[in-house]
Image 1 (cartoon, one colour):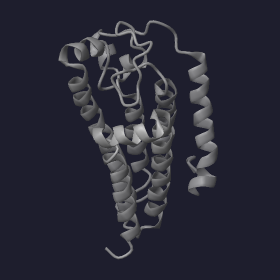
Image 2 (cartoon, helix red, strand yellow):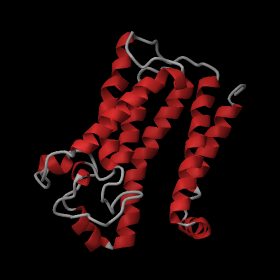
Image 3 (cartoon, helix red, strand yellow):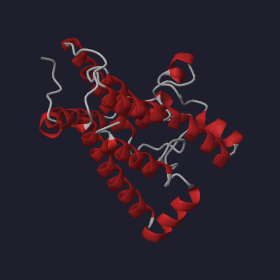
Image 4 (cartoon, one colour):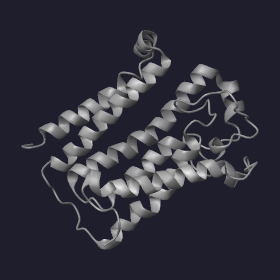
Length: 229
């Protein structure tokens, strides 16, 4: 375990930063102390800081190779990231009382918008981002890092569904979720949901801008070009 101490500490801090605020009593006290907006802003800043530490600690952890690096592996994140950016752009701020941080104002169960495609678009985006980044990072530290992100995001979707069902009651939750999908595209394939309007040009532009920013910042921030050699 020599040399793994920082990675383990960062990982423990990451888990605690997500587990403790999820406790309803603690969350209510924090929100009462700094306000709901203040709580969300503080939580986001702390989460980003710990995430940055965790990513850096994974890069500094002892290298334990699991598979050899091949040029084709770069295509996994490069093909996945446009989809990730679309999910983020259409998920952030969209009316969605069924997912983490979503709001009920403006949500129409007959026309659920992005929730019709994926009830938890941001968690799907995290899982897709993490799973795609496993492919070109064939070492133990990054497998643990990205594999945990993907697993926690997928487990979080079912955990949020259970919590929302308890909060809303089974009948109301079923009515709100009738035309939505836990797994992307499930409601579309089953015929329970059809897009009611063309995609928002503003959100499409936001997805494109996000993708370009992430692409340009990858080398200066992470230290490695994301483009295939």
